[in-house]
Amino acid sequence: MISVVIPARDEVHAVAGVVRRVREALAHEAHEILVVDDGSRDGTGEAAREAGARVLTVGGIGYGAAIKAGAAQARGTWLALLDADGTYPEAALPGLVAAVRAGARQAIGARPGFGPGESLARSVVKALFRGAVRWVGGFAAPDLNSGLRVLRTADLLALAPVLPDRFSLTTTLTLALAAAGDPIVFQPIAYRARVGRSKWRPVRDTWRMGRTVARGIGWLRAGRAPGTLAALELPSVRGTG
Image (cartoon, rainbow, N blue to C red; front, side):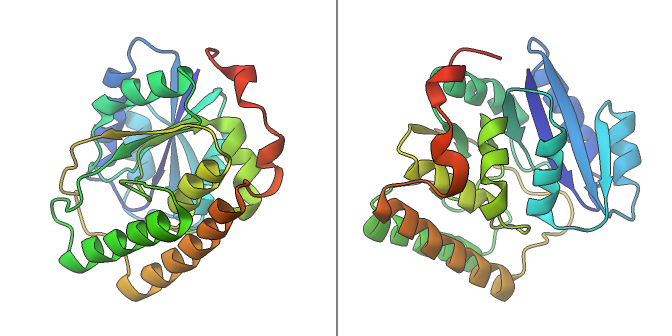
């Protein structure tokens, strides 16, 4: 089964549409949709529930912590992560699922370099970090921190102790699983303008991502994954779920 975890905070105008489009995209797959309502004050949880999602309510713990909380409640072998703001194409999910079933350790929806509605400063920062990972860490990643990806639930749970509680969780997932040495697939996706205001904070979040990238480059150069991830065997679940 595929568990789709959608962290959400004050996304009442977008979350119901996201849930409905996920249901359509995975209509022929056994799946569950778990929206983690992270302290919303605008009725996000109610909107998600009415659209057909299971809702886990937490108290403003942060994007990464919300994903970890959702993964801990997931019932599926495969874990899909998706933002609640309407930016990612839900129709890309079946292709990402197919990639991990075929043997990829992680399948990531790779956005274009300059997305709609994204500031030039943010695009430049991300390009600089991708360049550092490529030239210092030896790993070419077209999108380090995409919010649309599929991996094994067990992998995220194994990495939970080193995954940040904020926005750097996705970057950490990319680099940790790349350091494990197993295949990572990047599939190009379209990227829509978000519904509502971005929660990205330029100084704070750039600093956090910089620390995450530096740590990930260390894993890549050492050629090993962090923590308990190395003990997990990928072939044992290929083709299952």
